[in-house]
Length: 391
Image 1 (cartoon, rainbow, N blue to C red):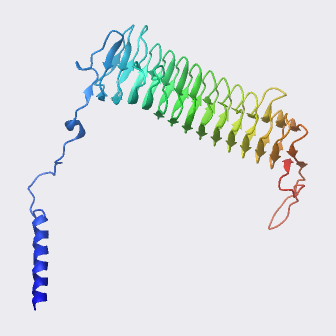
Image 2: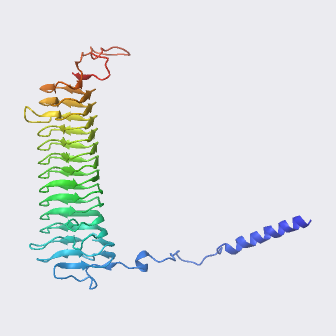
Image 3: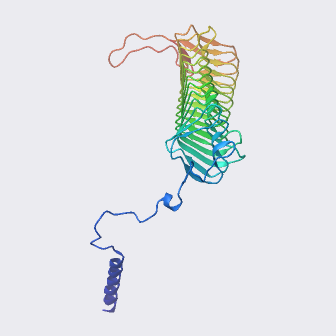
């Protein structure tokens, strides 16, 4: 009996505790309102064009303390001054959808003037018509910057320039005089479009570029240095090369179309895989030493008799599983010591031009008669799994 009595008391105590923690069954009338403060109520953001962010001798507005700043309206520059000068790290500048417009004789739209500044973000607005750069975070080596959702156009020099370890996201740069987007080592550029700029579309010293487009720039569409990754990018109708890279670069699932010079150019230790390269003025894909070129399609590249779908100028390259169609030369290998297997050439003036001393077997295919039903066909001419084919 004593055990049962204790059990009943424990259950009643627990029930009572649960009842004490529950809310009322009849809450007061009216809509439910939040009880917590918003972030802006805890620490309000600062309007850039307010009295607490005045300019100085060389800037319309100057930010000298960490914090979150925003525009409250469109801004027009003044000759002889930057638009917004950032002289501190830990700053977030939200253009709030407004327009930051330059005038003749002004300098950069948004600029960092102090050295070794870190952790800055600029976002959400339009920066146009500045005689120098739209965003200039390069000259003082700004690191760990974030640039997102900007529209930069008609700036005299570059649209956006960033230092080390930067992220440039969903930006559009149009008709800037010296180039589109540039970033230093360790940067990431994603979802950006650069068009009709007077120089390179997108340029990274070493970093990652994904889902970007460079169109009709008067230079190379993309330039990337050793250690870079380019994925799912499109380079169309640029005056220079579609993609011009140096050193150990991975370039995959990209399109190079109708560029004046070559489609893709790599120097050494690069990988070019599953790319579509078409209608470029010179070679489709050109590599030098120690590169892997796998699974690409080159079509109708080259205006000169010496142009090729794939051109190899050095040794120790692996050229495998590519398709080269309708060019002056399909595969042109001008050095010994390369591995060339399982490629297909057709409709080129010269399908294969391979120097002696390479691992390469080319077979002219045998075409099959018509096939209807469950069987038929003819072996293409070789059972060697490493054979290259001409058809």
